Image 1 (tube, rainbow, N blue to C red):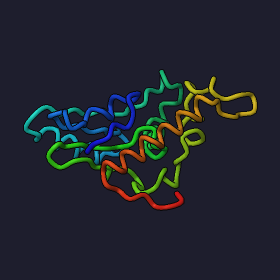
Image 2 (cartoon, rainbow, N blue to C red):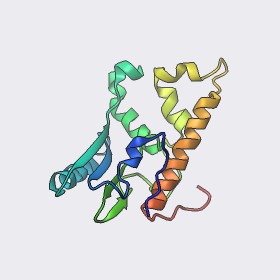
Image 3 (cartoon, rainbow, N blue to C red):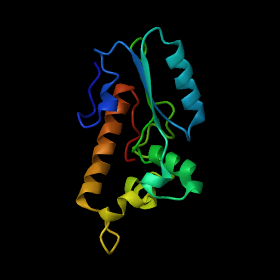
Image 4 (tube, one colour):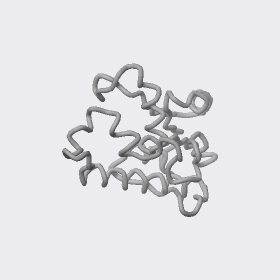
Length: 161
């Protein structure tokens, strides 16, 4: 049985058992998963949705040269985990780097490796560079959703990571 990761993240609820369509969360920094998900959506016999993360350097306030790196960080930090759901076959998180880990070892911290690179989060750090309670709560929520996605995909996480 599929468990909704959170009502605050409607994208994760799309693949519920009551939904007759397929869905995937993709990222331009992971082209193999993107193409595989696109093909699966195209071939699916009913409705299918793709949710793609493409960072906007203007709105998110970082240099254009950083688009690909920031997109990668969104997935390694589990801010934008990759997943696919096909009602016929179930959940998959195979496109994620190190899918058995809580976060990827390289660039895996939501606050230090993702938020500090985007100007939209500047107001969430104090003068000493400490993150706000809101950012800490968001990190915890991201990781809780990731753990539920691991459960949905029947991926056994590595202990202690």
